[in-house]
Image (cartoon, rainbow, N blue to C red):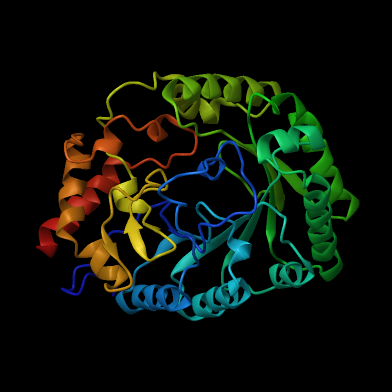
Length: 372
């Protein structure tokens, strides 16, 4: 039973995801990432997620009937740097064939380490889970790439991703669904049409279909060129980023009536108090590389730590946690009095945000009243 141990099923939320940071180390210094800083609490000490923590957490989810829509193997670092990445990925495929805990797995990579063995691992027909690999390239020209990524690896990354496309076509493998990601900056916006043509053309030259998407990736045409909004570290920068993003997406014909609510969200003022129910406390646990758990990828300084999987089970941290229960109630009340980093958070005004619906809040309240 999908429950908390007392017979009451925990609610299942649409768009839920769990992040496991395989490592906080990275081989690039992207200017949209905290890796650009010489000193930052998240990267002052580096390391790799202990596979035992990962295996135990997933098995605990199976034991308690817990489910998430998406498993994301990425946060601040480059996941392919983990020395046991292949072992971890194979475990996910085999585990989910039995447990059905996740509907989708995502790997986000900068492409530097997409070597032959990794490409072979990625291209498979295992149908236990929908597999998506995001290749974040962010540029159509070498000079732009260096300006954003901080390293001159453009030719290497393009070659690696091109070989991945080619291998999937040669093997005729069902997976991975490929996302060619372009995070929209002021410095690269003009290259968006060229980027689209480049990677759509690469897929089509190999007999693979490729669509294009804004706001969130879609897979109605197998693979996808995805223009992602930039989440900034500063409110003023975020307002400029939102405006730039909407204008560019309109020019590419990617803003229709079905996107009106997102566009309106991006047009809202950033520096306004958060009074809505943030979904992070319900839908998106984030596991730091050392095993500590928080509620949101924005919490890269681990301020809102809930627990530690080195000494606690995932089920206890996420569904039997009095601290989190109190925070969830504050989120429902729209009062973040004990959550300083949430009070003026800009993510709810971002395209990269998953809403918490009134029906989901009601489902949580119904469960929590019975779980006491």
